[in-house]
Amino acid sequence: MDRPVSVLEIERPETDAPADLPVIDFSRRIPGLDGLRGVAILLVLLCHSIFDTHPQTPLWSHLLVIGRLTWSGVDLFFVLSGFLIGGILLDSKNSPSYFKTFYIRRAYRILPLYGVLVMLFSLRYMKAASAGPLGSFSHSSIPWLAYVTFTQNIWMALWGTFGAGVMASTWSLAVEEQFYLTAPFLVRSMDRSRLTYLLLSVLIAAPLGRTALHFLFPHGNFACYVLMPCRADALSAGVLCAALVRTPRWAKLLFSLRRSALIWMAGFLALGLVPLTIWGDGMSTPMVTIGYSWVALFYSTCLLRVITETSTASRGVLTNRYLMQLGGLAYCTYLFHLPLMEACRRLLGLRFSYSSEGTQFVGGLVGILLTLVVAKFSWTFFEKPLLRRGHAYKY
Figure 1 (spheres, rainbow, N blue to C red):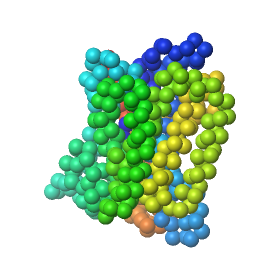
Figure 2: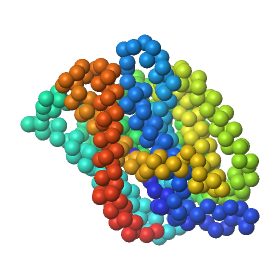
Figure 3: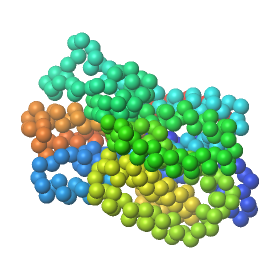
Figure 4: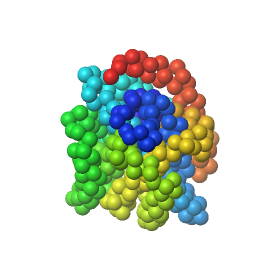
């Protein structure tokens, strides 16, 4: 998943905005977006280390309900990705090297690190491969080739399983890669007005499609969680936000709202998340039918609040330097946190019970810390140099 797309990748917006309209320079980094990305990966880490565990203590099980929504960190990633990628495409749609530059830059950003993960995962298929004293490899009904072609989410939907746990999170990367195959062509071929209507149509069609899958497909709820058309509302909401802030009349309306207006809107949407959280997890029927769209609207409102709050860009929780740094390490962290968490839990399982709450919690925490160390090293010596090479290709 292209979770840590840098705002530095966005070209300058159109300059036909009215003189009284604040102009956001999208060629510069917007600190709040790094903070939002940090929130997204933090939610994912909390979900897999704490709130997605299955404790044996009834009281602890009830307390974990308050964190059920942490799985939605991936939805925040979708909205951010739609906004950032949509902005890149909108700002460069008339470039003669539009498709070439876009896909080359995406390849430099996504493929090398993902390729490392897939190669390490492929070692399990060697005849002499063994997990050794850590136990045995977890069962995977997903073919290895699916991970190479970014179609693992389709196989997951067909079988109703994430397959091997260490590769479970890659479903969302497949969703985004499939999104990249369609979005550039739509943005290039449509004017801003037609594109807006299309995006609004997707926001309506996605929950209808999920509802149909819920009733008609054997693993309907699971399929709704992992298939790209079912999650297209979050991605489209992000693209729609990118189009709004680049359209003078809509941007003027956004900036003319009272500062508290978007906060009140986000608060209202947050209230709707309470019953959705109580009724079940990310694959509950209320969530897969209308819930994903509600979550996407909530995160989109938060995103617009960050974009339009230019006067306090250097202040606030989202510009906390540690949160921003976490956002910068999000891609590697997202890809490798599950394998490293599982390895640490199995190591502790050699001495203690693998299934005990202590082993799961401590192993998860140590795995996260190790992941962050790996991610920092990867960003400094691997990802950043590759990004520079990718940016040698200009729109």
